[in-house]
Length: 107
Image 1 (cartoon, rainbow, N blue to C red):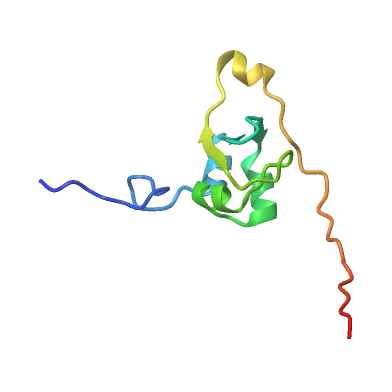
Image 2 (image 1 turned 180 degrees about the vertical axis):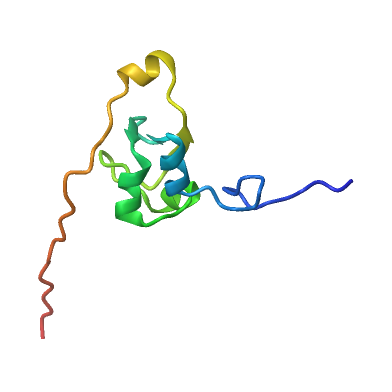
């Protein structure tokens, strides 16, 4: 019997596991920077407000570390259990600011 292959980020049924799915079942997003080794926890529904309803692979490609501004993040969904669930501190979305910048050209 041939092995089933699926794209990375797809769960076995073939439907991609999105931020909305993770929120509905109570999962948490853990993002760890591979450069400065800081670990942050986010609610998937708040990341969905920023990036749209993407998969965990989309988060890895588009999310930057807030400390060192690198794109090298290890992100995963997980169910918080036990002591980790009690001690976990979430980064909460307060507001989204759009900054207008003026660009000059010398002639």
